[in-house]
Image 1: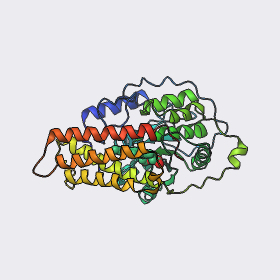
Image 2: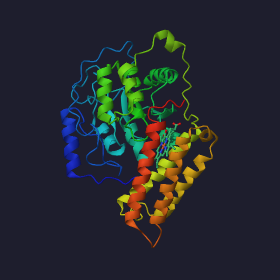
Image 3: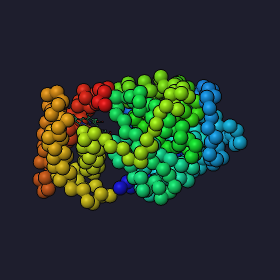
Image 4: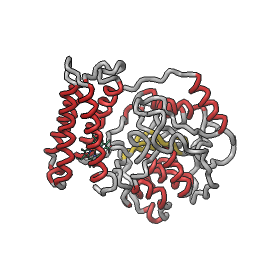
Length: 370
Ligand code: HEC
């Protein structure tokens, strides 16, 4: 569970400024411990979007009524990032990490995690959510607030043509219900790429706009396949769209490797919290037992090595897996109850982090896996 951010003068002033100016310079960094004050991306430093005038959408679906648009009430949706920043959006920003209202029809951000998060999205007028994350979405949580989920999992290597069409058709259909919120896990990489398709379909956004929006969301330049979507995606022809059947599943099956990674990641996030708490049980997560978490991580990697699909991977892949497992065991040892070795813990943690990154660079980030 995430901790809540106590409303502060600074936040109030920031939001006031942002709403007043008609755009948000800063994404809602109010919630997750993972969000450092200075993000090593353009997210925090992006200048006000120098948005070119958007091309008119080929066929603008009738927009569902949205809350009055700050700055230009009554004007046709301008599809300029931030124009749609209402008070409800400002509130959603404090709930959903990396939340960006990109237009009256489209918003993007991180995964909603609590009842209050869905409530905030509903208050911002969101009628449906598309998740491209590997994790299974909280379909019921959304439904309670009248929001419909659609799950289209993607990887970090880009979006295959068939999936682009599926997303295009999905956004066209969901746009009829009202504003759509698009997310992955952190709302930084895959979500913004999928969101680019929504922006083309529902707002007729230009490639320049899309690339600028991905940069602002903090999409890392190393994800070339994801940027390629923003750089090249065009609205499919009417015939192509008519011929596409979008399954619009609330939950979609994901490969075993991806499922395991979702679990690895959740464990890793808890270990980050342990690290931030000086290698102790974090005050707001009394259930987390440091050494036990590291043991679970090691066991995830051991299980992974047994997957049928992993047996078919190159030796280097299994080498990374082994390295990750060993780093996790070393961390478990360093964190043993009553025998904490902070130096060893730091070393093991860094070794583990480097191993995640190395395997992803070699086998995930620009490698077509499906
Ligand atoms: C042996 C290689 C390897 C190691 C080590 C590894 N990963 Fe991964 N990871 C992958 C691959 C491959 C994928 C893509 C799986 C897919 O989409 O099919 C992935 C996907 C992910 C994802 C995306 C899940 C989703 O929602 O789609 C996350 C998050 C992740 N890894 C986190 C981590 C973390 C954190 C670590 C280290 C503690 C780690 N991984 C270690 C290979 C690895």
